[in-house]
Length: 368
Image (cartoon, rainbow, N blue to C red; front, side, top):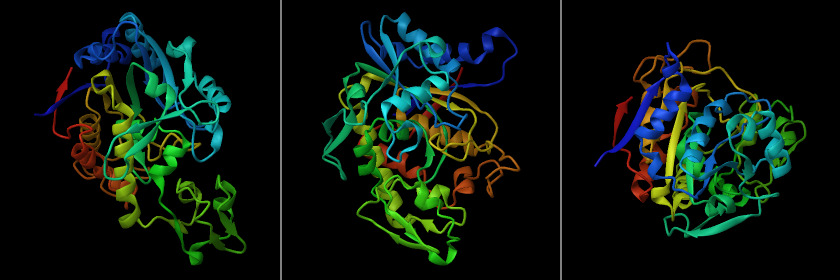
């Protein structure tokens, strides 16, 4: 049986058609009032964006979701987990500061902010899932404790996951640093002939695992967590993953963590995917590149696999934009994510998610 995904576009010529009202309509159409019950402590799982990034979901668009939860008699809170790779969100103090700088909190988004894995990422629970890669996974404590959850995701491309949407927001976003490290576990390889000696990888490595003299001379795999930051900052692509070996199991591990994030409240979780500012990179990077397709709309569903598959399909139906990181596959129907990151295979996360019971990739799309 197909899962249902609801869609609303971005064109508006009246107050009734503005994005806030479209979000309220999607909440109702998707039946998310069944997800949230009176008295719930309801997590709104969101990404607050790295300092320097501006493509995260606008907190003004989160407010209607918070207001709907309040109207149902529940208590919403905005939440995310601390990062594995350092940056401006590696502990709860810095993370709360970034959330405030980006407009998240009671005044704009309509709910307080709680960092789900605690001050230094050590607040988590072990959840038994008994899947191929993990018997137990580590889920941030305040997400595990929440009675219900609305997962709000900025849908965009991602290296190495292909794309980031609901599954990634659950799997990576609901895990503490130790859980994120368990999912990555991929080790970069390096080509000294391509190295310019700029030291960006060494300076950017949160674990100081890379040594550069005139060129890259060593990667200490005992220290390396596989976070992939070195790949993102290297201007000459001297570092890379073994995509055929490392990336498929990485995405399977991420999907298993997503399964663990909703285990125990499977009927108490709803999803929004925002297909706006569809950029080449995760909101974890301290910049926002130009979108590679036009804004498409907003989706809502109770199924994380179906909403990601629908989002993936909608992006690929678009005409790719010129003067962006999209290097090929501009025509409608072509895989835009491979056009941005040629070695990624984003479909693995939805395929495997369907296999393990996270959701159903077969969907019907209803426009409202």
